[in-house]
Length: 439
Image 1: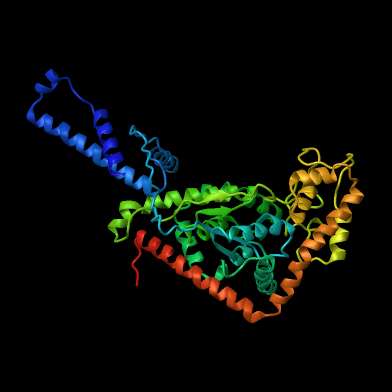
Image 2 (image 1 turned 135 degrees about the vertical axis):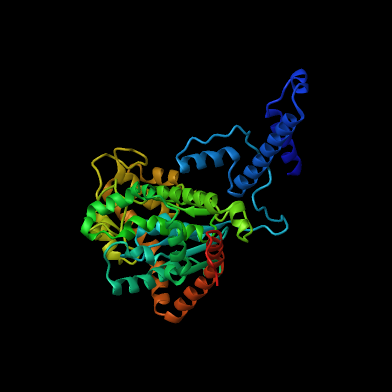
């Protein structure tokens, strides 16, 4: 890395204005010193910019583009970008560190097939490869009107369903969001650096506030993307599993991380006694290729949702066999012959085939060949049987876990302890970098 820096600096010196020998000899000694001083200051500027931009995980060009966007100005630099092969904060090859993932589900309503196939089922695979933190996001559940008793019960139910679906407490940290107070603390600190315009453009806020009406919408509905950013940045997450509809919120998280790194990180933090560098990792999205968005049973263009007024629109994980059969029998279909994937004119067909593929464990090609010539009546029976067979072991395991309250409490307490160990380091660093007097 030292050689690449020296090479860069030698290139920079050639970009400093130079003079022909005859012209330069006519300059006074003071002018010569001035030119030398300007060249030295330029080199120092490039070095500082390089170090700080790499600490933020950006190239110099990327860092300056982000700075210009956030500042709203027209700041420009003519330095060349620097390519460095060594990763930021690289670890020793002798002790590789697994990348970290965080994710969670709100304890509102019943956990349904969309939550399971779009998120929880993927967690089971991820926990074997990554360091994982899966929590019940109860603080997000109060952004709209709710019942306190229902929130209490749903929080425990959601935790039990995590475990029943296969989340392993020996591999993943499972905890309740409100049990780690650093989530709320970091949210408040991040709020001070979040432009209100960033929140006003959030699509979900516009949709939910329009449905609920101004009198029923609290400030939390507007600011909850900042809490979501705190949830992610608190654990220095490398990757975040998200559906297509959550990509906008993750982009806000990334922008906010870069903004705070610029405002308070680097040499500014070091002058206050910190280690310097970036305060937050800038996370990347992890979008599963299949099952990222399961659609409603009554409208193939709308996402399966807990908040939909009709329970007919979703399969809940704890639905009985008869309830599942009734919902599939009545779900919306079409009048086209045969069944096929990826026809834009047949959203319901694509959704139901995708559900069958995911719960049966078959490939997309296998399902396409199996179901190509089926009619809807035959396929609905096949889909119902596959759903019942897949969900029955989860339902049995759920009943075992929810009846053993001490086991569930122990799992949540241990998960929160592991989470606090990481979260407290992050939030204390942010307090320090922002100039707070600590006890």
